[in-house]
Length: 552
Image (cartoon, rainbow, N blue to C red; front, side, top):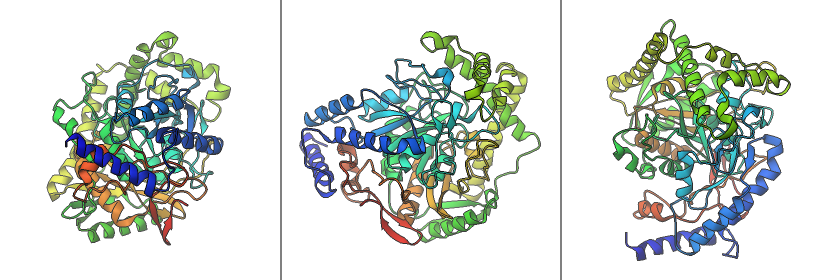
């Protein structure tokens, strides 16, 4: 596109956002500064109640001002230029400690960005601060409370603050759901993006392992770990995924075929994306809650009505004897190896830490760190041998091959494009004494396979959000986004929690529409965030009772 046409489209987007969306006229403070101030106001207003945010970057307003200066000079870094984003606090971000929620790392300011965060900044995103999380990404105790950390306290579900936000990307999901920020980054080993996204009524994408760099992220498992986008809608999540995917030569899982990093995930945002899709319905992952089953059956009917060809009553293979123990062992082996390697690479005094020393730290500060639950996962991991162990080698080969074959064989046998099943059950009541009450979900097969997985709101059970999972073969994100977006547009189940919000979409639907003749072009040059001022447009969500305006 030539520069004249690009500038015209950029001006069109600006007019749509500032004029039609109810935002203020351009003033001395540009839109990025206004967005930053709105975000800070909402964090100050609500964070004591829901504990979504651990820290705010001290240079936030200066960074916002710089992005506004760039905008005024015509230097637009990308479609999300100046949009606020929250980073899960196991991901390094220059200027803030990276704590993984643990007091042992409370002073761990590395002075560097994770490779992922560096790329987000280069794409123009405005890093607000760090999101709370389940401490150590929920890999410390077998009876933990999701969303609790020694640094951040207990994060709470904004749909019912007495209920769990799930985890481990708890604060990321809560902050988006409550309208603090339009975008957040989470991480997942098994369910840590999908479960909190579904439980908090938002969209989460767990990409194929390696598609997003893990360098600079506190690890659990190099075979399963990935970061991923979390947003109030599929459109914003797809734009964020574009900004997150870049080849990292120092990440061993990064696909060697670098053409995959040239994909534009916004091209999959087609309102009729379900038409012609052959979708397998995995009923073997249902039955853990009757309310979820009702919503899921309706979702299957909605998929069919929107043009999908449904292949129903499918089952993923049952786990063989010993498989679950082997899958746990893989994480225990890899956690000790990967965490010790990460810690040794930290600058300053933190580089002397090891898993063994962290166990001792928790014992020394048991009144705070071990007040509610213990560290038996740490202890079991410390007891494991190295990755050269025959037990590890056998376990990791079995877990990966079985999980991948479970999905791949089902897709191939029935000629399917993707699979669907419920993401989760309704959020359970927070119980710091006895821990989580997880009922069921769909995360384990795609997580252990390293395959992509998306959750989209599919309605409410007793007022609590539940999600619909879309998953498939490795690097099938484009197919999954087409289906997820088509379902979202056909059903519009999402709505913000009554006591928070309104939601603040990162990309204006007025200024972008993939189905229009100029939609794909505008998506490339959209350079003005939509959450300007209190009157900014938000999505119109369809509740069980009908449409309701999500923004006043």
